[in-house]
Image (cartoon, rainbow, N blue to C red):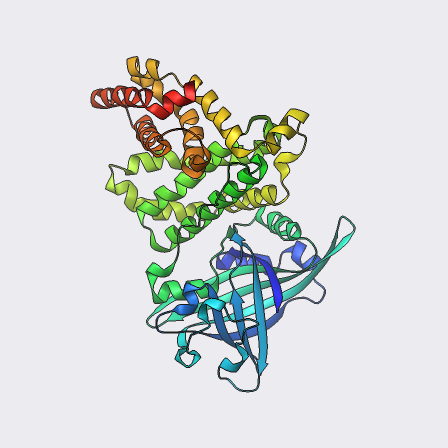
Length: 454
């Protein structure tokens, strides 16, 4: 068994050709690009028990070799993934279930009849790979770069494979992201944590692709730094999965959810005060602001305009042909992996970063509640729009961590503030003015709101 650490980047055929000739890759390559034709058959039970336990079983033909592989899904965010992998070299092109023993086989499948394993889908592609070596901070880094072009086939359905994989062989995971960032500076690369196996399952059963990543379980005593990192990784990973699925299906609801993750991430970045100095997050905040400035009006317009919704997939495809989405995603991953928000903090910022989440969050929400002029919003409903950033800072923490608060009815507070936030985003007319005023009054009379103001 080995632990595989890699980053997967979706590309176009044009970008794939540019990567093959990229001077950075060629300068670090030890032996140039080597071509392999890989034929892969994936196995599962008719009930897809392996997919349910998040493992993949594959039989690969690489030239004259047959390799049986079992992979377990580990952590994966923005294309950077870590997982366990077991390989067995076989003499025959047929699955050998006897190799799937207790050392690698998931305990949840201990009672599974392995004779029920059958072919589900195939992934056949040409791989051009090169071994890259360089020095980073005096330490050797070794990475296998692979350019894959082919198809995933499940019954009558198929999808193109066109991607760059960077697999770490030696060195720190940050080196993978730094290499990807250097390539993404002038080439459109889309970090994508959907594996070839997941693509096959998605073709076999479109409902099998899980959009939602589990929300991190946070305790009131967790340090703010740890809570922030967990939530930021969650939002970034969710945005990646939603971007990939919207690219695949074009369903408007997925685009709305993608934007919601970015709004939450922007609000999270803006909520930490001295725990994350503005100088440390300025680049990320600027990149997010640019994305939101372009996409938020489109989503608002599309709520009542079918033509906008119909045009959105092409607009999103054009976004992916630019460098900014991939560059932002990789920058955010590197920023989180290296915990860059902790650099250049004052002693006060260090204390805030180490503070228990429950105590810190109570102070944050109290400060934000005191600064939110609900009385003024009742009298002048148009003023609610300028309070949207504050509302979004409150909402992201209530959505993801309200369980750590010691106030009455936190769920109700969250629900009513969601309604207020939605009204703040909509174009103002006479009816909406009345609704804004009424909702501001509703929030102001809530027990949990009054508890925050005490």
